[in-house]
Length: 221
Length: 221
DNA sequence: TAGATTGTTAATCGATTAACAATC
DNA sequence: TAGATTGTTAATCGATTAACAATC
Image 1 (spheres, protein in one colour):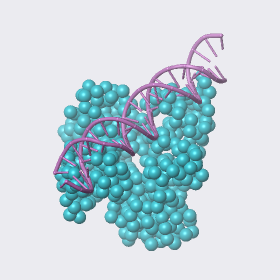
Image 2: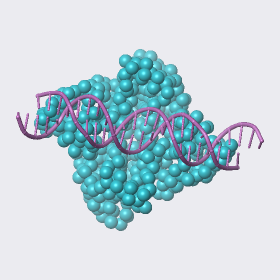
Image 3: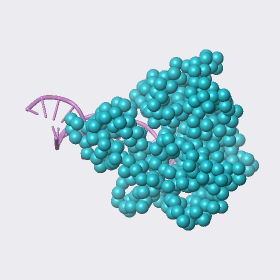
Image 4: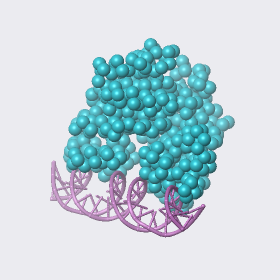
């Protein structure tokens, strides 16, 4: 957390949900949806923990952020908990997003969202490659990059996915901010330099590969 | 970290590099490669920190894991540091991997690796979809899933990327382990139940979306 | 030498885990 | 009531940050 966000959190006198907790929440949601489909009405924190391989007290603490109360000897109501999680995560309403850079990863994310609940809906993709412009990926049209400015005037989209080549990432990010985007999911390796109030989620695939390789090589020593 | 890995770490009397540090290392590498291309021979921790928006003392601590020593008033040698990072991360030699599930995300990861240094090289992809079998994605062939067993006998691949639908993830993971795979990069939402010595890297796109959405909604309140 | 930077050691901060009281 | 489970409060653990000595 940067100093700026810390100050904001303090000013609002409301503590932020820790990032590790937030990252676990979709996992609970998927699991709960699965057991709910199987007809399970109630489930306890210890049994969730066993399935998801995490500490039962952590499950209790994590789920507490939704405000849902469990009953001793019974556990949590799966229906109530699913809805509370969806609500808390913002997965229950459409979060419209732009995507810039309809390359491999970009296309995958667009196609991915149709099968898996991502919480986001890409309503338009942009690229400068003329062979891509005019095509549809899934149901999403790929538009010419210059159309971004015009379209953003009409649509009021706050989220953007950045899957461009590294060398144009900063430039595109600045354009996005000028178009009213407030949160950027950055898949490039560039560290974006943007106004403090812009929310940036850096996600580099190499980071995970690094952890995997290190643990693997470590285990051999 | 599970109890089992903790025990192993203790037994070997060698402390593991913290995961947050590991995740940052590829970022340093990309940045250093960039400045090295620009002809920069030496760089100090404070200037790296400024560019990458992180604490200079953290930069020093992170880079210390590579064993490279910096010089006061000069900084680190970019060439030496790049090589040490590549070496430490295992990015300097080919880490062969299988990929199961040549759907959208799977295809993207295969295509992605050709443009971005992932540290992994997918040498064969497997699927049960007959329309995909026989095709090539990038230079990687998509083979019939049943061929996995035969091929793994010959090739000794230790890493697998799992991008199947959720409902077959556990089953496929077990097959992979039986084929000698030691580390699985799991993109499904299933929590895999596998022997303790198997290294699992769970990576769910929804987790990041969750953090992004929460921070965005939080900032509005 | 003076000054900037590294590198180590200590302090802080935050998340996880443990303990236990409250509750149905 | 008895017992399992929640939920809160305290303890632990680990990573980050700060302080400062060492060094070129």
